[in-house]
Length: 583
Image (cartoon, helix red, strand yellow):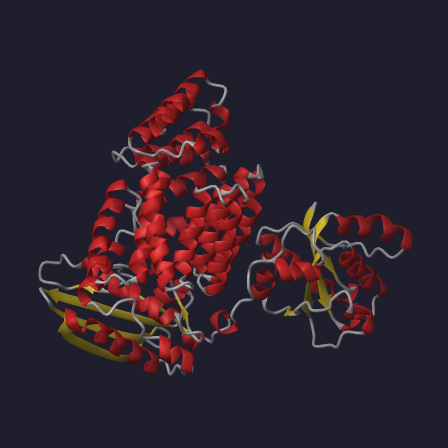
């Protein structure tokens, strides 16, 4: 079975061949007729069977293809067989009546825009629904044209602000302001803004701004620094055109923590003015809205969010303590309740299977959604809570609603993919992660998740292809962040799936030599050793992962990476030990 059947006129063969080559490079399997089948009997036995065995049909539209009787039969058969159809324009031409019905309501994409073709294919589902039902039931909304089709002058990144405080102990503040500025600018439909995760690796970088812009695929860079001494603060920022090297503006914003919201608003307005962005009335009303008007609550919130991407038990507990102080200062702080829910959920999922964490999550989300029923992040957290409560249908509904409310946010799709993975719905997880990758900047974690989903499906070739795509992103990231052990173990796993097994085991030895005590990392290292037949070492690491608080016992029964150990008597003992510990 192939992913895609390409329907075309023989006079357009050069275009068909070139597109097939590109699609294969993106990991798709292609059926394309290169022999010029003409006889009706041959068409019936070869072409018809090929269409039945593919998930999608790409139609290359030209005057020649619309005049071709065979092309019409291919498209009609694909429509009758309920295949996903993607019409691709080689030239502007009006559809004849014979093509209008099978292509009714399907958006055509230009041949020259390969990214749009990929986006259309990412929406491809299982192929069991007719085209109309596919369009009505697929959960991904259309891409926002200003977001992806932004001109080069509207693509920008905010690099991590530098901490210039006298004691250099206010990094949480500089990081928090960077993330807040990124979140503010993301609300503008006319901008493409690189996410916080992708720019974090450029902290204290020695790379030239032009090189950073090239890597991120943007033109403008915002750089800055923060100085905080007691209650006094000073923010300085610059807007740089990386293409020309010109600094368009640079300014300083002094004040106190009581002035923080005014400082942020002034900074944001200068960026908007410098980029000559026209604000719609809705954007003008909402752009400078803050989750709180209390500077003290905001400070605790910024401190708490610096722990948001860490994976240790201690980090989550510290986050909970800080966010509780933020809520004490402002009982109506929606974002704070959402972060509180996240921390309790992660503690429950990875370290402490205690009912109290689900109860705390439920309480925090009930408050957040009572204050703002459309808060997308809270809906994403609610979806995970519902999953852990056993309500899978409700969980998926909540996650889809979160996506529909924030369809420009690649992280919303990432959260949805994560939920599908938890629900063992790995085809849907792949689709969500691929869509996240399509609308966001290069993010190695997407390929890690896609690879794992293929692994669960037993599709080792899909896992291998995805791993190969992700490895260069991990290698670039780890060169700049060599102490990120979480990314290091993910990189090691992709090496394994890419069949670079000796290197994977060598890197695992190096990583474990750092005295790793994080249970999640130890578990994933155990998977690498077991996949490579080193069962005793793998079981030793499984025990160690549980001893260090990693208690996702479901993985021991579902994770295919452990299959080689399941017949081992010692593995069953480990399973019993962990079961007793986590019960």
